[in-house]
Image (cartoon, rainbow, N blue to C red; front, side):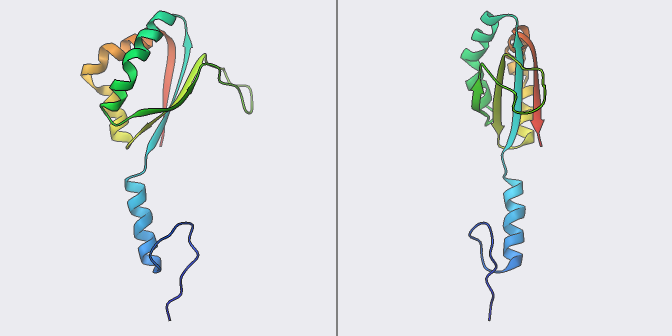
Length: 122
């Protein structure tokens, strides 16, 4: 008699198959990055936004959500003027996007818009 284990997702009934599916999921799992900026040059930010989506897409990235008015949920963080959650297929794609020599001018434009930081989550 083969016992089916209660698993959070629909997987094959053998624990070995579940472990293999978890390993495969980790290999293909999206990675996220948090973008935060305090804007001192709105025109530069507007120019950056016009081209940013296509630049992200070159490396499989996209903006999941963005807000011009982030709020603190807990604690007393420095609140940026703009915040966004970016996604990439993996960390290598995120690094390829930030290191792409063809995008150096665009990243410079973003940096000229004010102080910014991008945190890779993973």
